[in-house]
Length: 161
Image (cartoon, rainbow, N blue to C red):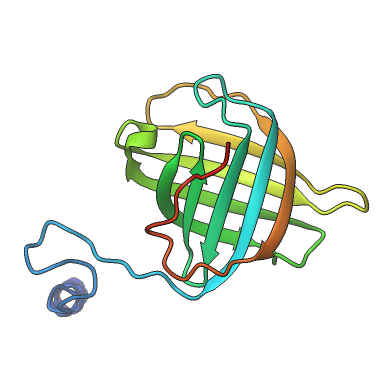
């Protein structure tokens, strides 16, 4: 039984290893990921800021395959997200993992934002964990939600004053 299970697992791993082009480029050192269809754009305005990133405004561009791009006065990076709930819900949570970038010392960062749509104002609460082990105090602010019309976010950068 153990030999049969081992053989089955080995065959599955072997088959997965020959799925050319799914997760790596021909050089075996880079990963190519495409953006899905644009879905939503959130504009965040922070009331409580992180001391090392005192940027009060940010824009997040969401795509249908779980990719995102965030820009602000001091950030410009990509990552993946998982949405708990829907953007139409009164309350929903999004968990983000940023891809390694200069924004976070060429490491990843994890953010969890909970959004609450109100009658007069939409608010969010943010918790973050970074690879450095530093404790980041909870942040919060307000947000707006609109349709994302940017299908290729690569050239999109911060242009506000």
